[in-house]
Amino acid sequence: MRWIWIDRFVSFESGKSATAVKNLSLAEDHFADHFPGHPVMPAALILEGLAQTGGILVGDANGFTRNVILAKVPKATFHRDALAGETLTYTTKLEQMGEVGGLVSGTVHAGEELIAQAEIFFAHVDPSQAKDLLGTDNFVFTGNLQRMLGLAKAAAKSSGAA
Amino acid sequence: MTRDDIFQKVAATLVEALNVDEDQVTPESTLQGDLGAESIDFLDIVFRLEREFGIKIPRNELFPESIFQGDPEFVKDGRVTPKGLAELRAKMPYADLTEFEANPTLEGISDLFTVNLIVSYIESKLASGAKAAA
Image 1 (cartoon, rainbow over the protein chains, first blue to last red):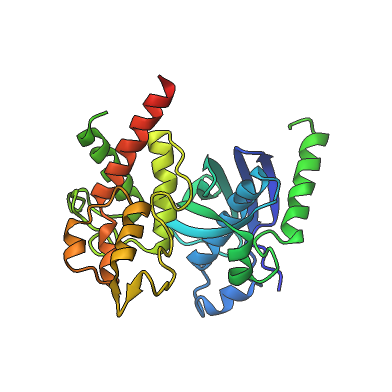
Image 2 (image 1 turned 90 degrees about the vertical axis):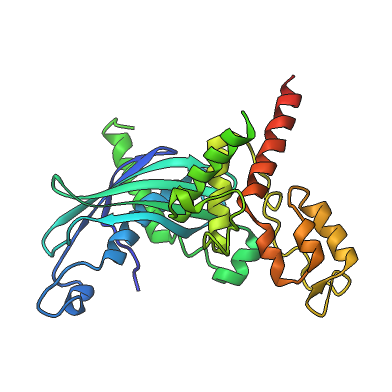
């Protein structure tokens, strides 16, 4: 399964911020069951998209050498449902980076409208803990996500924005 | 910074990290029993305290993980042995063990993690930092 809940990075500033977009298609499976006749994106998946956008900031801060897991969502507020056909913009900011992990704050917009906002705490796990918890794979940053980030960085360079 | 100033900042940090009301946080509150902290919250608390006070908190210094790891010399029949108490004193010099020593059950250990413990830890940390800077 491709567990990628963002479509494209639109900006990435190492150690500071990342923005990604996600287009919602009625063809996505989750809309079929959530809910029949009333398709709205599950809030947990909105958070997942925000976590992927922000988590990669935390991973990038250490050159992807540390295992990073989503440890906790200290705060999350959802203002309205996200609907099929909308484009969500995930804007994340790296608030604090430390030995223990990193704290990211983020907002989710559909157009100009604020749909959700959250704080997400990512923790570093030791290789020994990680093996017990995660197996041998670094599941947080799959090759796919890092490739997407690579594309975003390349695009930023060629446009002179970075 | 006075001890009360430290307490106010620690309390504000716990309100943020644990989503509790300000009036729930007293110096005697236990983090797990009274404030509902779970294991991952301890990481979060350490992280926020580092930012709030501008200090580094090495892993296992404020909240030592698995202090005894089932060592039979430290725990016997669910109770902490005198040797275990000595180990606790060494690993958690900021904890108030007076009450615990009267009835040192293994379950009682989590009650040692109080708001006061954090305040004492930060107080000593700030004092040693000031000494180092002088």
